[in-house]
Length: 285
Image 1 (tube, rainbow, N blue to C red):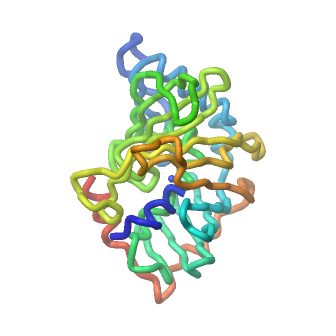
Image 2: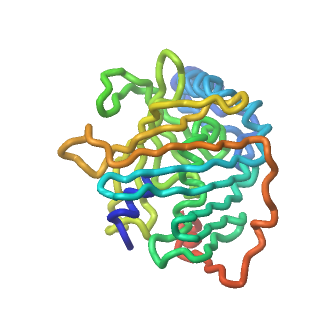
């Protein structure tokens, strides 16, 4: 288990009001229904956020989501570069790390890697950054629950944002821990920040104590076709004495939503190694 640089690098992913509300439609990511909303207000706020980022109609047209990410961690001399591709309809994903000459693949059944170091577990990464960038649309998955609307602030900002706690019915690659806390701009309805924790056993020292909370603050957005996506964000966390000092910054670029998913990358090479720890973790939750 490695916590130091690697832990920082990954921070480089209807009833009456007051009652639970179901979306009543097919959700994204394999759910049979849409998300469960705690209240009518929750549904109103979340749907406004989804529309502000381009809407579900535009998102459902994306067959393959490809991007590159550059992450710079405080205290490290070099930045880290990855190229990541995800098939939104299935979640299958491919990550290439040229600095390590390594790859990670989630083929829908197993996570396997090539030339990946013994630690940290490759299965922590397949849809991590992808989820951070596309989280407004992932709120519509059938396995998602969305809590009541509250208010909160982020480091270095006096704005009172609308907040909604997002949880999954079971562990999956779209969430690194137990929850996401969404910070939504009350004026623009854009997702301003997310808070989360980390519970993967390969990333924490004590299995009974999650790592976090960690906050990503989205500083810039880019129009990609009909979608509006966060493309620059900073990370806060691991520094409880001074929460206004960021640990890392991340730039997302070369986003492509018009291509087809490369099926050839799902062919497992002879030297691939399966991440058994991650599969066991997902199945146990």
